[in-house]
Image 1 (cartoon, rainbow over the protein chains, first blue to last red):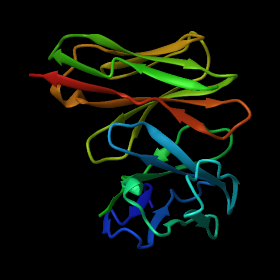
Image 2: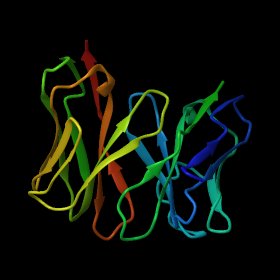
Image 3: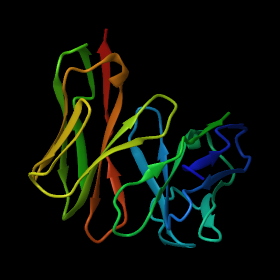
Length: 114
Length: 110
């Protein structure tokens, strides 16, 4: 596609439920990142993919968070047993190659945990 | 520890009143400094990349500059449509991680 696509754009869930957030990067982009943005906060790094592997998952807050990428394209971020503190905007970004600098972001998935 | 600090947190300008936003950074090795614009409810939109001290980039009313310790985003004769949050990020040598500042919320009044 022309840009990074994320779905759903909005998700309201009850505490304890599992959620899946999807990211479809720019076609041909090998690197994919997930960030979290809480109200009034900066972007918090969660995980980085190069192809289908995740060399850096150091930002995942707990073992309730996991992510995968298949076919070097679509990625899914899964949050199990959601908590209220998981409420945030989850942003996905992609980059063309190791020597290109810019990240291109999707519009984000806003998660609200009641 | 690698760190990015942006100032001011918020800025209100009259239309046509030029100003500058600051991004100071402490990193072990800079592999790029990036400026983004973020509108409410949207993802960050890429503006500029700077790689070495002395480098400058321009786009319409925006000009980004870089020194060894900080970057400035100069806004010349701003318009209300320039109102947004401006984010600065650095990529450090030896990692694939981008570290973001908390942004400057700019409001330009007509």
